[in-house]
Length: 77
Length: 188
Image (tube, rainbow over all chains, first blue to last red; front, side, top):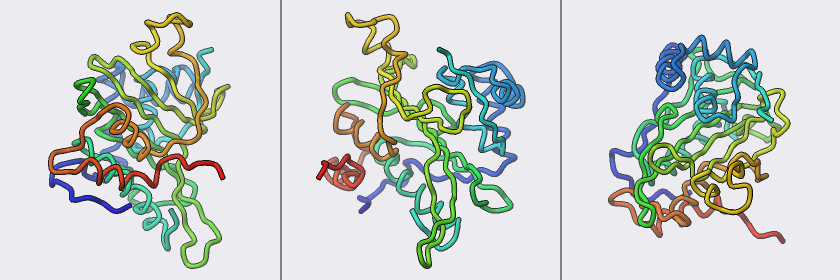
């Protein structure tokens, strides 16, 4: 891809280690589901949450930043 | 996106996505990086603004919001001096109207077990489908099959179809040209 000229403030890459990832997950879980990051991880990994729900989907894509890998899910239908 | 090392393959994959998002949005594209280094087959996540809805603007629809989440995996391939590749293992893209009213979303979560619909699919949001005469109360829940959709194609869709404006200082035609490699190709 040939990149056009880019303004300095746009979308910038930010590398996240596992510690910061856990902080992000915790903050966002509190914000969107009123639970802690570990509580979200436990509930998701136990298959208790519906991944088709927007906020669950949102947080699922943060699990890896915290180094958490589990694949449990439920089908809402 | 092959590379000589796992890190090179990873960067070659995520940097074009960051550049594409940069055409229309502002913020952080956070990508996971294990301090022990990238491991073969391990999943890394990448997310725009930590999953928060990111402001974009359409000339026809007004303020819109974009979310982007990716799951990526490094694999070893048999390709000469570039033996590593970075592959997509899931995504979540959504475009919302204000108040997080979903217009359209693209889901693919192949690693989540127990799903009947692990194939890539899209949802037409209730704010679009709810006013129609076909299943108005649940059309937005239908899983409409798609191919795997790269993030760059979502940016192109936003610009070309939804009228999302490119950031100040960028030329729309040049941006679309840069994104054209990610457009669907005709069958031969």
